[in-house]
Image 1 (spheres, one colour):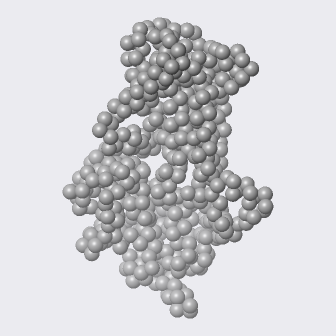
Image 2: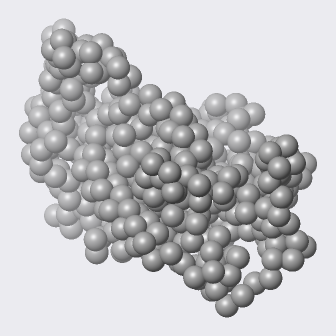
Image 3: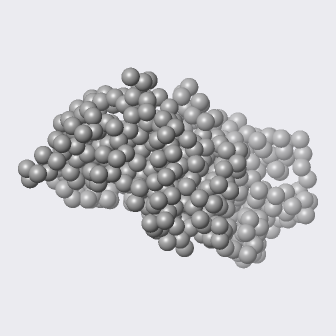
Length: 258
Length: 247
């Protein structure tokens, strides 16, 4: 652990370069560049609002805010974990050449997506203000789900990164899994009816739903659900511990499999 | 005798060569159940033990497959040895497969920063040396072009320029003296010779015995992963020639 912290400062510049590379390359060769990180969620929000709001008769002025908040958090989770999953293989050229602590690859993959995600929260602020969702004191709670979300994504990302080296299939399996998680995270529907039904466990045991739910509470001015907070925090910390242990036990074998 | 810079202690490196490639979970599970996964254990290095003093320039000789490149990668830290350990004192700069770590979509300029940071340089150091790197690599006109459009010679030149900007204490050379055209080769040889003058410690792999005799003062000879001779370069070169001659 001490070695890890020392290494972290030593490699801080490299980490910054890797994060920069992720952001730069994501939007390279597109005319609007980083603006897409704002435009894309906005456009998806409009599409989802039209489909679920108009066609399915979900009204309510703040429905777009509801959708947007869920979608932003979900897409960070899915992109961050997917990026971490592929990070070792994607950087095999470097790994075969010079020694760098390998956790930097999944970490930078999650970090750069987190930065893009934080930037895209600007859209949420604007849309919320336009639609008259006024911030209350509860808005300060927003940091709790945001931090838990990062830990959760990095923890799962480390687990996936380790598995991904040995089994390429994980990339395909995970893309199916993230789709399932999306439907189980109450992004464009209201969770109440499902929570009361016998299938409610799908939401209750989904840490991402817990994070999204707390995030929305902060935005709409309600207190956080304590069960959700502790469940998602516990889930995040445990997956982080498992991920780090798995990664450290296997990392010397990575080179033989990429 | 100078200060010890590098000690390779009883290093062994084992590879499991699976006979077939198992890439997918399904294949793995099926083959595991059927007991079809067989590994051929293969020791690329076995009980290799030597130490390098400050200012020594050690040639690593051996036939193809003797474990020379594996040894360099173990010293560079890319491979973790199965047995034994490598003790290093000082900054190691590996010149292995130049340009292999570049990000193809990045421009040359961006790659200088990325690659430099990978080699452990600080930001201010790279900023300071940036012009020198560009000039040495002779890529001024192409520095804002993505590296994927570079020729392999251009990539090697840029890689060489970045990696040799720093004055390392230990330099690892894997046949890199054959970078680029004759003119650049001359320039790169001169740069490496300058480093030699500054008392750098060198590990050098080459099949060119004349080059090894010219560059090195010590040498080790590997055969199928075993260290069979170490000492002054002339003696080891003789042993190497005998080995080659016998075959």
